[in-house]
Image (cartoon, rainbow, N blue to C red; front, side, top):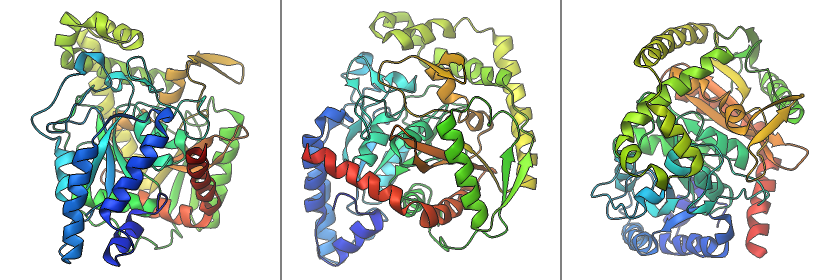
Length: 460
């Protein structure tokens, strides 16, 4: 049952092949056996079983109406959960228990979702490795010596290892898509503001997004329906002939490792074979614009975390402490200039999306790095793992456009590589349809390998 899709789980409930309580216990048992992955900070066994029993009674009475009735999910630990510890991956908040749910948590539970627990993450969502100094590093299910990406690393690991049917993460500079690419799952950063962000421990209200990580595209469509109330599963299998895909001539094709570049090019050929039209485009974004993420994100983080900076700075992990220490050093003028440049870039990308339906890029320029590694070399050039990992996905946090990461193969080291697809504001539908078409044509073998990874992990 661990590798069943959301749709298959619901069909199994309806046909009485198994029950929400049985499935919930199965996930809890897997979490117990795979504790070494360190995907969870807090497991909510009692809550999950209570919710499962409610769902089971609804199915028995033929009254199950929620889109996610009886589906066990995990939630990143910076999403508030009423009466349940919410640490945001920090020692500072180790005893914080919210008195209300985040809006997205409340919405999904209203749709019948079961809360298995709160997954591990990079402290305060302020990094891309999920190497947490207080709750321990999250490990990549494909190879435990490597990171799962971050900051939603627990979400990526939980979905890949079948420790929850799906997960909800947050994304400020790639924090949903980086773990999705690193763990070989699907991750969507929706249009900025599409998902209500109330009840989230923010970094940046300008750059923060909330979205799902799932095993496959149908699951993603179902999750997005549950979150937004919009129908994303209708005509999911329509073909993509005539779809115009923009292929960047600059920025997104620079500083990419050989394995990633090769799999990216293959994915483009696969999309072309499905009838898509590839069009080379110039990208109005440069390495200098990457500084926008820092100017905006750090300035707003300094405001959000001001109390922590004043009273608990020494209680933070070294990397987060260094970032927040610097947050008040950014001049107000630089912040205002960054917001103005953001507005210009957003407009320029919107004009690009009038010429093409989608822009396709690698999700990240490299495969996951070993836990603890802080520097990486690509084509003879060294940079920090952090700067390298956020370089491609952070673009669409700045502009607010929806962006999807979908697996496109395995590198020579056996770790997953992701393909990033971005579209115009509020056009998540074209991303989901394109991802579904690509998945159906190209990812059967990949998914079988991922499922075997989950099976082998539990047998060790």
